[in-house]
Image 1 (cartoon, rainbow, N blue to C red):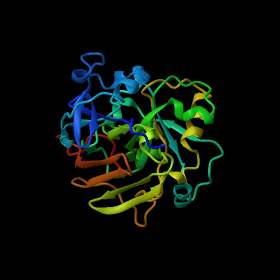
Image 2: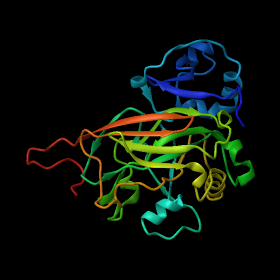
Image 3: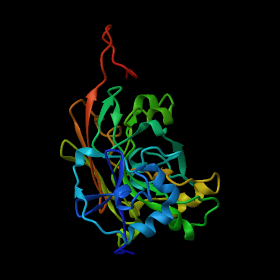
Length: 294
């Protein structure tokens, strides 16, 4: 499936750019204003953009990772899938679902690939995920046609506050500021020999916590696009967190959670790597942290 016309889209200082060999080509400048610098807006014109991007020339400027933002900064809808790897269901001693287990994350939780994230409590967990970005309106899509509606793939973390999750407040527990980081690039499916079989994983302070292949998904990307679009429309720029493999902290013995100063490294083969640091929430005068106290 790999194509010489594949595109790697990045967000540099809130400006849309194409990444080639470690260099960023500013889209607004290179297109003479045909396409704006607005990163989210490009998904509304995805077919036109892909046709232009396939033939545009230019070297661009070296990419500074610290300046990268989310390649999907303000999606209208953010879907997430629970229990979509057999080994993750097994580690939690949970039965496999018959249909995709869908919840939502709020768009205000979106962050870039190198942001600092505040810990609202002492039971915050990691969940490395492959994220699908929709490239055109999708409604009642058949699985065989699902890839035609995908703009690309990116790396995501479904950061989760487990105490609030068990209240239960699943959507809120996964939507604190910074709890949905994306990046470092959006990569079109034709970049990969097989976009359904990529290595995924994460490390905390250099120690491997998760490692799997996306071919282990219970419900594949075509399955998810078809299922969601059978219920409601998917819009350009919507994102789908496809689920996490085994290795999360909450089910370890003893449980392990993120602490101030930890570095969380998340990667997916052929897409790239995100790195996030964590810090404690500010203290009020009475000594309690902001957010949820575990």
